[in-house]
Every structure is written in structure tokens, then in C-alpha cells.
Image (cartoon, rainbow, N blue to C red; front, side, top):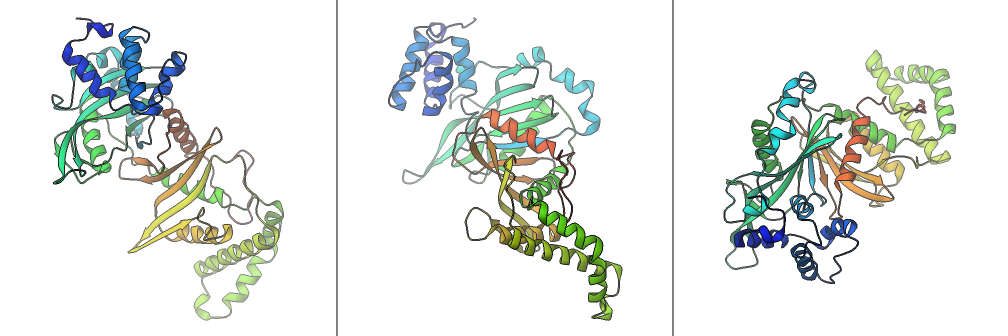
Length: 410
């Protein structure tokens, strides 16, 4: 039986719909109001949920619109984002195009209102759509959440939404996981509380065995991209300093380094001389910044506010926003990290339409991830823009070093 309106639903399906509606928060009704002239005007969350159901019953809201809205309910949250890139040999293969055909995928799609927290036994595809830009999937999965508000704490069944999309232009897969608290079991697998890295592993194995089978790149480029962003952020952007460093590098640097090498016989090798020259340029650049200042690039997409790197047993963290370090202090700390250890993670603030969105970016074996560091609603549009800007750094020339200007097209 084809269901085209609320009155076509069975009693059980209506009960299931009400359970799903209980997951809706105040911010979720914005999409309905944008499409239906502010039809939802309740003052409280319960009012808005009830008004939505009432409008659906009276066919003031299109049933198919509502079904899709429910399937994307937790898409525009403060989700953790995981990016998987097919290997170069996979990107243009016929297999991806064949396995990802919409008519084939539609056959796997289930009716969302058939499910509730009691009868959902495994991961189910509840919506799939295709545009010129992407193929988009909505899934639900059974979870247990720890309820510690009662004594003793109990595990409660619930439904978890997650999302996957394939970006045709950027040629990568994205898994988006809403940050739900106290998850202790996902799709029948017990996990450490809120271990989303474990959850994404389960989803990765499920999706890339059930929907498309491909090999992945190690996404090593993201480490260099993060270095470029960091160097770009801490660059002084001062033409006076660039000119002075250029003169010193071409006219004085070798002679000064030669003089220092004469101080000790152990300094008499090319590698030591290279380190001395670099240290001198860094020192001079820092002094010039003190005397001539630095200029902020107002057109930048990213700001760096956190940098963590692990070398041996030591964890280095520098916060630019905490006011505990000046620009120059933070710059010097970060430069030492960049030159002496492998990147573990970087905190970036993405500037988009006069708003700021903080993410922690890090790389794992076969993916890189963006973890939201705010409970601010972050739309999929913002996520797509962040990823697009990050990918631009894959082929962007390296950021300027002391005495070298950044090219205008950078």
C-alpha cells in the first residue's frame, strides 16, 4: 500500500512517528517554517511538535516533505565528520557508478515509520537521493544509551540517525555522526561510552560492504594541508619584513653562519650550517615582528586556535585564543612543533557568512575527521564548504618561509 498522507498510516506507524517526533528540537522546525510560511509558531518545544503533527494530519504539510524532513532530522547538528577518499584507481571506475545508481539504491530504502526503538534490529536505509553534486543517504541504527538519572543506571533502547554522502566533485565519501551522549552499544556491538571512532568503524565496514566496495587512500595530504594552513595563519604578512629578510638572506646570512661555524669544530658540516641559517632567519623574523608588527589576512578562511602534536610521551598544546600567549609566542611554539614532530591534530575556526565554526581536524589510517568543538548548529552547507576549502590546500603551494613572500594566487 502506497502511503501519501498521514491518514494512510496504521496505528503502529502513527505511534512510531510520534516517537521519532520526540527527537525533534527547536532548531529543527526552521526548515518547515522556511517552506511553509512560518506555519509552526509554538512557544515551547512540545507546542511545536504538536503543531507539526496537527498540520501534517490536516495536509497543510506535504507528507513526502515531512518524511524526508524526519530522515534528515539530525543532519544539521554539531556532528562529527569522517572523510574517506577512494584510491586513485577507484575514482573513475565503472563499479562506483554502477553500484551507486539511484534506482538500485532505492530498492534498499525502507519506510521510516515502520520502525521504533523496540523493533529496529539493525542498520536500515531510510532515504536516498541524488543531485548533480552528490548521492546522499540517511540511515538509522539501534543503540543503547546509559540513563544515569536513575539508580541504578539502566541502558535504554533508542534510535540513532547517521548520514553518508558521496561528493561527486571532491570524489570522497563523508560519514556524519550526530553527537549523542551516553551511547554504550551501537547496532548490537558494545562500545566504550561515546566512542564515535568505534562507531564510525562499524559504519565503515557496513556501508563499504553493503553499498559500494572500494579501497581507500591514506589521506596523507591532509597533514601537509594543515601545516600550510598553520604557516599561513602565523605568517606576518608584512612587506617591510619580507624585504629586510630577503636582503639579509642574500647578502649577510652565509657570512654570519660561517662566523658561527668557526666557534666550534663540531659545527663544520653542511647540515649544521643549514640549521644555523634557519635558526638565524627565525630569530630575525621574530625580532622584526616585534619592531614592525604583523598584519592579519582578513580574507583567510581558517583561524588556528589549537595545535596538538605528540612526540614520544610529550603532548604539546598551544591556544591562540586564551590570551595566555601573544601572537609571537604562539607562532614560535607552533613553528617548533611543525619542524620537530608529526601533526596529531589542529583546531581550526572556519569563517562562513560572518559566523565562526570551530573544528578539531585529525588524520587516522584511512580517513581524516572533523570533530565539532561547539554545540552550535552546524549545517551540512557549512560542512561542505569546510571540506571544499580544505581540499583546495591539497594542491596549493607551500606557505611562505622567512624571506619568501606568499604568491598572490595563494
